[in-house]
Image 1 (tube, protein in one colour):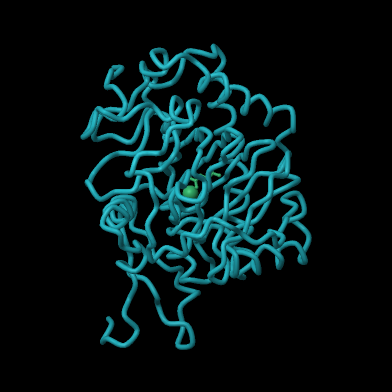
Image 2 (cartoon, rainbow, N blue to C red):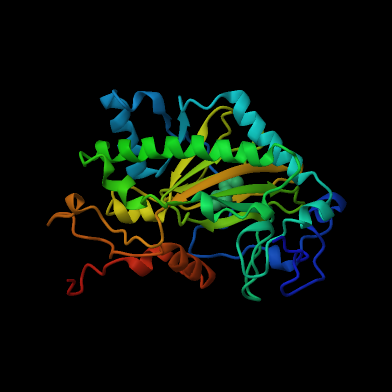
Length: 357
Ligand SMILES: O=C(O)CCC(=O)C(=O)O
Ligand SMILES: [Fe+2]
């Protein structure tokens, strides 16, 4: 069933499309101007300190690489993955398919528009409040796993190989994620399935294609506001040339450089919960660019919402008490908290001073 809802129809039909704005250089509407928040300073400048690089192919036998993985997930919660076995030409095909879709005429893309209260499909931010600051981007969000939850009517028919590429890319990414989840457990001397098994057979995977038009006010407008991912694990294919992703390390925004063949891996909140805080779900954001368009493809993998997840028992002891309660369907908690301006993880955190059972 394809829905035909015009973009920005929710509250304010006066908005022009971001694409038009970025071309004619108009002032961004007030709804896009960022405000100071507890999610990190709004200053859009960033440091250029290196983000760790992990060679995925070494993780099965190199103790050093495994230790590097543990250490960077414990501090940054993010790394650039190389040696993942997905060829550079294949990554370019994924980028090309995304680009092809976004450059279609607006009416064509509208065939896949997301319905007002749904996250799947093509569109901009869901508008839930008048106070909301909007992200400067267009996105196409599609559920890829479990396969029986796909909505084929929202999968673009143009380019004609879009579905095939997305299907294949999802399978490849999922394999890599599963391998990483096992390596993460081993790096903490846990049973290999300690994290992976919590995802379940019916783990959810969403693909999000992000398109960031040019923006005349990069110091005032963000491509994506600061957030942590609700996922367990996120794999991101960055634009080949245009940077924009920044991650918060020690309260400072750090640029995540583009490495053509690398995939950025960052953990989401649910891995911070399952690892009892041993691994971090980093705050990140995307800045806008006055000259160049940017694209990215994010793959989010999260536990089956029917399964209760929680800190792995072996990561709880007197020295390291349980930090989070068990939760089911964290996606909803995360979504609600974000809309209310709260930090979602704080809502499932156990107050260490109270009487906890
Ligand atoms: O476009 C990017 O680099 C990151 C996007 C992102 O953080 C997200 O979609 O959750
Ligand atoms: Fe994100």
